[in-house]
Image: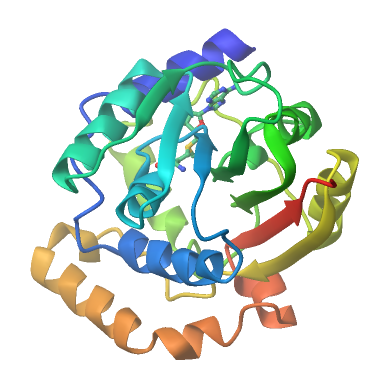
Length: 258
Ligand SMILES: C[S@@+](CC[C@H](N)C(=O)[O-])C[C@H]1O[C@@H](n2cnc3c(N)ncnc32)[C@H](O)[C@@H]1O
């Protein structure tokens, strides 16, 4: 139920601090993402991020001179995104709305993005169609999708679940949903959403997230620096069967036909 999902996400983002400048694995993954995006983005333009959450990706794009709008149905997410923009000393728009009915005119944008959004719906086709509707012909659709699947990065998540169940601190998950996806299914999703020139590939083979390690800032920094220094090695698995097996996300993009 949509109201329940909205409640879940709004509680998730409550009092979220600045994340865009924090030196974490997420920042390294953002940089990898931007590396791919640089190769496909137009040189300038208006850009909308749907389900923007903390707005980190849009924030990076705003730093690169794009005119960005972060859209989310969670007021707390929009606050978190604003905080990140302020911390990065960039400006942008912030829009409350539902991805199933974007409060945006047809064919008004050069780029539409989502990151970690489409896996949260049993059928995300209507959202993809909405994102395509607001794109100008020739505009770029980009999404990264983090489906329910085994991955090296999440292979130790069970440690955190075990600890939470032992100390009885399981947070309410009502309203949270995550589905599985394969490259082929994502390709079909984009095609049925009305896109052409589609690219989809698995990525994100990185060492496991170790919750205990993240308790110590020093240990976390060591892990983050090591992954950063060996980034090329990890990126080398992108687009391969190893990433289909051990990666934790997919990159997907396409163009709205003229
Ligand atoms: C996993 S989070 C995305 C995280 C974000 N990409 C980031 O980097 O912080 C999914 C986001 O989608 C938003 N969302 C989920 N369903 C939505 C809907 N129907 N309309 C608008 N936003 C939605 C949630 O509020 C949440 O912020």
